[in-house]
Length: 166
Image 1 (cartoon, rainbow, N blue to C red):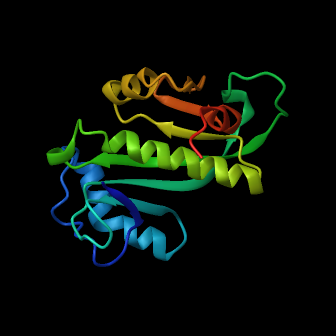
Image 2 (image 1 turned 120 degrees about the vertical axis):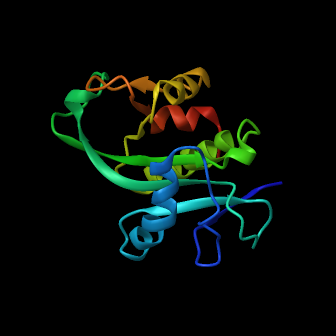
């Protein structure tokens, strides 16, 4: 069964190819630097603990968003804390095998855990294209569209908690 690990120096980032050059290059050139500078944390999926071949990855960072773009009532005006799923990608050789879903579930659990100890309202993400947007919405987990962009999605921590992923 695949496992999720924090990106380390021994992970082979060079052979990863998801079919999107921007996502591939981020893993190769920026992910480790961002982690070293505490700008984002990249998690990788490998076949078993300690393997070097990256099957998929996702990146989490904290952000604030203005409540004006959230279609929820009762929120205070101004910025609120969120977790941004900055990137999520699966190697071509492993696509359509549940790795994306595994990573998203892990990211949602991590968001819910963070929301228990600090002010995190939701997980937000920017779907890279319409196909990705349909995938997130098609999961049936309650992702909603933010009002600023149809590819900008969010899932409140309260909804994540109800999914029972912990």
